[in-house]
Image 1 (cartoon, rainbow, N blue to C red):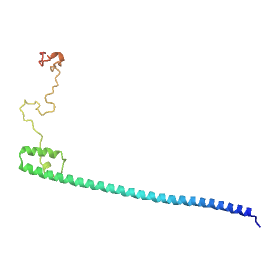
Image 2 (image 1 turned 120 degrees about the horizontal axis):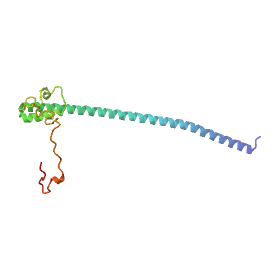
Image 3 (image 1 turned 90 degrees about the horizontal axis):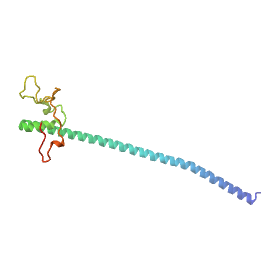
Image 4 (image 1 turned 90 degrees about the vertical axis):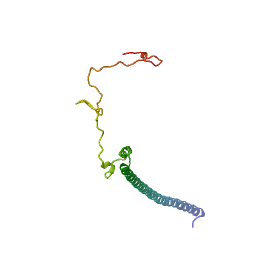
Length: 167
């Protein structure tokens, strides 16, 4: 029938073919297994990231609410102290409280903001039509014939502290 060498050769050939086919199938299935595993790890990482981002957003929202509540309580406390001080304290202390309240911002229901505060008036005596000391351009001259004094130089001074230049 068949010779021993033909049987060994055929057996060895099919052994190699089976090994090659097994390695090929293992490679195909291993890549599918690895890709599924990688997808699972990616999905897990994405869900972890989304949970973390949600937790951070909730934390910041809660912190913002607490700071807003704390600011409102501070504002109410300051308004209470200010209104009490305006009723009970001297005018100087009341003025300081009003000045510090202006730095807190405007509140619609504030007792302090409900009062009408006027800017200072210029009651100093002055000629009719003249500008007062509180005018923005008080003391500035527009005339072209204003006397200009020359600037001083180091030669105008004695170094013992006395001015030697006379006008």
